[in-house]
Length: 180
Image 1 (cartoon, helix red, strand yellow):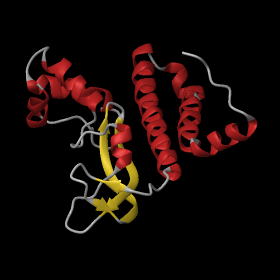
Image 2 (spheres, helix red, strand yellow):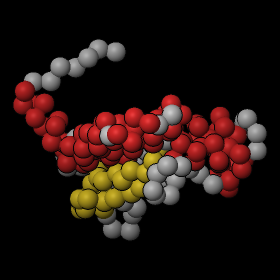
Image 3 (spheres, helix red, strand yellow):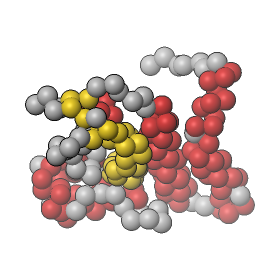
């Protein structure tokens, strides 16, 4: 993989777009520099870093999605497979997505018509599933369920989220059985 070297202007925009992620990373660095970290066991440091970096990664994902939403360009003509057009738009349409890093919010333009379902071309670009759980989480669920019971698989999927303060984004047993 090649390393992208942004221009000064692009770097400033990047810093703005990913400020929340950078803030979480800086907070993790400060936590590691604190006197309390100096007496932690390696296992506790691993747990701490795993939890903090998972949240940094989730925020990077969220910041990227926010950047995509900001830059989404209205399409001139949107039609479905049957040829029915959509003449109105609604900006800011939201949906949740549970990823292997945690839950994120996808914001995009909805193209609306009379007596037809709304279309979201950005969903197709992202290849979003119809359900809440992302493909990566479904893949993880299939791998973990092959190792034992569904209940054990659910627990293994939720385990990395244990130190987080909000509820885990892992699937329940019923959803897990749909992936296998």
